[in-house]
Image (cartoon, rainbow, N blue to C red; front, side, top):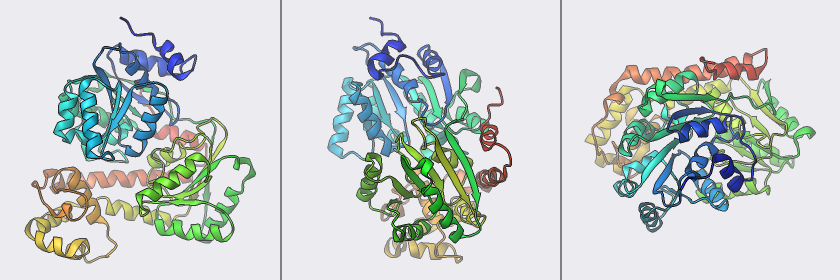
Length: 477
């Protein structure tokens, strides 16, 4: 029995008569067994490029489309949306309790799910791998594929294992999807997933979102920034929907929140120091329209697929063009005019430069940290991270390198967890990559280059959208 053609599946499950530009060609290529890299603007339908192939299998086919996604927060919403359309989908991640997780392993092994969402970290679990081995992965879709690249702006160590993951599931047809991969990043993705670039067809749909109006407003200090923000939020042309104001620092967010509340500008706040249930409540209020303005750090956005966001304001400087583009991409998904404003103060660059230092410990720091935990584990457990930080450096009690290093060592299986007390348990030797200053320095240099690109973007005298097009350009076009 042959599966219905893609266009019939589109009408039956999604209610559309035709595909958006590029989608049909991508789907046809993937269904023919071709590997593909898809660069497509946020909100333009990348997910359909693996959902339609999943529906193209016959009912008694035990094949499955596996989606690697970094976004645990988004999986539930994606699956709920698919289930409402009558599509057999599921997710397995660390948010599930043990009983539910085991039940889903069994369902997977027995043939349930045409589409399954997992993080790459799930492949550390033998029971998951055993359940998946009972199925045939006909398509591996890598969402947010820039995470695969070691130069990507959201580096996840388990994404460097994608080639190994692909081999373990039979090297299936692979579809990498992203909105923000430069040519250099794409080359690294091909290398990391273990497919020669000549075997991957690039579908570059550009990055332009014609309905977004991009502004950069230079400001001198925080007072001027606050005055500009008030005016922006009162802009009548963009008051019909929701707005997000992004901050780099929680303390700055809280100061601005106090000022806005004192002036009767109602809003909610979202950042990583809030309890999980409070973060979820804020997100739900924003998505439902009960709150139409949120002040947030960049932790807010994963799982935000809201059509009527009319304004995205960066009250502090983003760390890279990639981050900036991801965040403004949440505006105007309904196609209506939307405004994206960056309030550019040069002093904010110092904050991002400090972030780069904290997120790039050198080889000496990794070595000292590892030796401290391996040789003085009892004291580490007794006195905690603050004591450890004092042993490792004398510069500042606010130095966050230790948090970065422990998180990375956890992801590489060197320690037993990212937080106390598990983080004090050393399980494996320190990998060579963390003793190689050349490799670590190159990563830091590229982070600095991405920040410098933000300075160039601010100084751009011409069309800023053309600047973005050049930054993400396809050299083969």
